[in-house]
Image 1 (cartoon, rainbow, N blue to C red):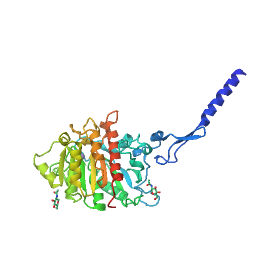
Image 2: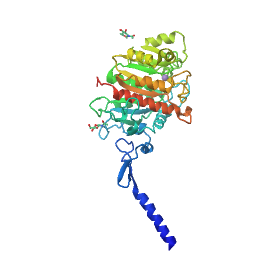
Image 3: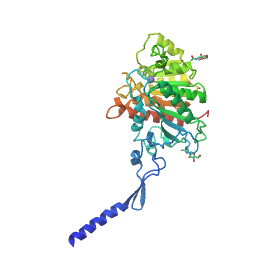
Image 4: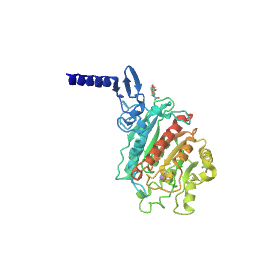
Length: 381
Ligand SMILES: *[C@@H]1O[C@H](CO)[C@@H](O)[C@H](O)[C@H]1NC(C)=O
Ligand SMILES: *[C@@H]1O[C@H](CO)[C@@H](O)[C@H](O)[C@H]1NC(C)=O
Ligand SMILES: [Mn+2]
């Protein structure tokens, strides 16, 4: 009898514990506006952060939208679209960036839109006026680079041809998660169709304006289209303005004068990695802003602009680069530029470390790029 009543008492206390913490799940993965709510007695409270590990992995737990659907009906509207470009068959050093989009999303898992008020600016880029979604990855073949780039051209065009959610944008902006740097060529082809020529701010340790004759093209035309020549090709195709600029350059050249002559011909000025030691972050920001003043801007961030200590997970690492903090301050200081497209490329998680240093950095760079897009005064469509 004694044992039985003890048992009943235990059962009763367990039961009351369960009813005191009734948990409801958000109706969709991607938590914006759908926090996980628990009830302690009569008081509901928002568990909030716990939902960062809920459902499938999208960038910063943003909602997934099937932006590449061939139909318009049923596709949710958006203002800023995250698009993965899993492509790495046009690299000159180590491959692996086809896993970059997945890596960057994994690096962003902890970010939850509700818990993203910036301690410096007081803003929350996710809960501003723009509707931001993750479109998943574009389907790209790994067997034929020409076909893969055409697939990516089509993906960019499809996504930017849908109407914006807000009246601020009639053309949605895309932030591409690379993928090797060749993928930027597709993005620039698509921005050219929508906006005409844009100025490029190109964060990289390498010039990437190599003449295909110098880098790969001696083999075949096909081989000449690669992650070290795409800016040369973008210039030849008339996609970019001659007011473009590199930032963070330090890698060796193939020819002492020819490479630089060709780089200037392609419309670029150069800020080297070591300039930061002489003119500081603010001097660099000033140069970048001055160069692209009064034009639409595309920002391309090759993660190898960072020092390998800050981003080991990349194919063509070069020592002597910037720290993550320096890059983020430079990016955030570009607020006010009219950024119509952006990317973070060359993230190769297989060379990353157990602490996921590179993908965490890349995820934060994406957040800065979103900040530039939502924070700017919009003067064009
Ligand atoms: C998207 O558009 C709808 C309808 O205009 C609006 O109610 C909603 O607030 C917008 N979403 C965001 C996140 O701006
Ligand atoms: C860009 O090209 C225009 C016209 O082709 C020229 O007038 C201008 O000086 C060039 N700007 C730079 C920075 O090279
Ligand atoms: Mn590059």
